[in-house]
Image (cartoon, rainbow, N blue to C red):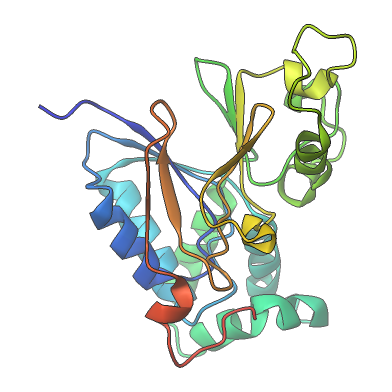
Length: 244
C-alpha cells in the first residue's frame, strides 16, 4: 500500500505538458498532499490550460497553492491593468495570447483561483513553503513587506553565500534560517548555475529548475528528497521560445 506523501512542485510557467508529465512520473495519487510554489503562468503558450488543470486537480486532490510574482502580475492584468511592459517582456505576452479567446466565465474562475493563493504555508513539522522568501528576522508572521513572499531573492542569496561548515548554533548563523526546520522555495532558477536538480543551501531547498527556460519541471518528496522531473520544457514546446 502506498503511503501518503507530501510533494512540493516547482515553478510551472504555463508548462501544461510538463506538469501533466511530471504528475504521471511521480505517480501522484489522491492520498498525496501537493504543495505548489507559485508562478503558474508566463512562459510557454498554455497558461489557460495550466490553470484549468490546477483548478481541476484541486477538486480531486489535497492541494496547497502559494502565490508567485508572475501570478500577481497576471491577476493584475486580468483586473484591467494592461500597462506593464516589463511583464509583457518576461512571459506576459504568451499569457495574454493564451487568454485571447477565453470566455468571461472561465476568466472569472481563474481570477477566483488567483485570489485564493496563499502567501506561504507552514506545516506541523515547522517546514515553510513559499515562492520567494522573507526578510524579517522574526519570521513570516512579522514580515512587513508582503511582496517579499513572492519577490524576495535575498533569502536564497543568503543561503547560497553561507560557509557550509557553519553550524546552526554558531553565533554567526543567520537568524532567518534558524526559524524553520526547512524552507522550500522557487523563484530563482537554479538552471542559471548549470544545475537542473533541486538544490539545497543551508536549510533552504530551491525547486525552480528552470522550467520557464530550458530546464525541467520538478516534483520532490519533502520527506525522502526523492524527486521526479519532466522533460526539459523547450523539448515539449519545440516551436516556442519560452522566456529565453
